[in-house]
Length: 140
Image (cartoon, rainbow, N blue to C red; front, top):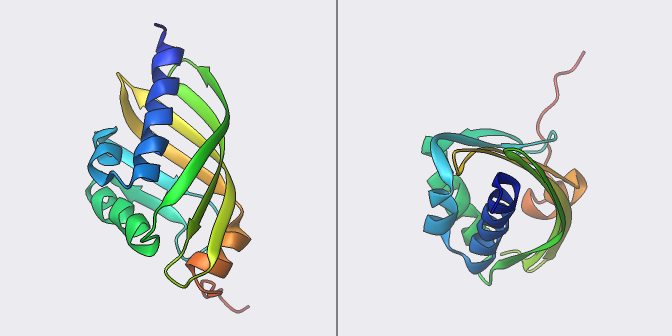
């Protein structure tokens, strides 16, 4: 197998672990210096470093008690990076259906995830996950 093939399998397994509610499996994918960056200007946007990841991943499972399913629609890999186009669907604790489209950029080092960058429809995040709340913006 090639580095690209191995890393694509790792990215696919990570999303399968999230879909299965396997917090330990998803966490095991990360290097001890790994992080996730959620893009945008939502209440959940920002960088979570490795010590914060167990809580961050577990909170995903808490707000989707019936689970959330990630579906990979396409992947491209080059060296240690894997770009993934995916979608998700799950029932939020509010009873609303959460459905989103993503671009994930997985960055690996020696088989461990060092950075996951997540791009998605931030309006879906705000409407469902953040219950319509937005971060405060400074007034000019």
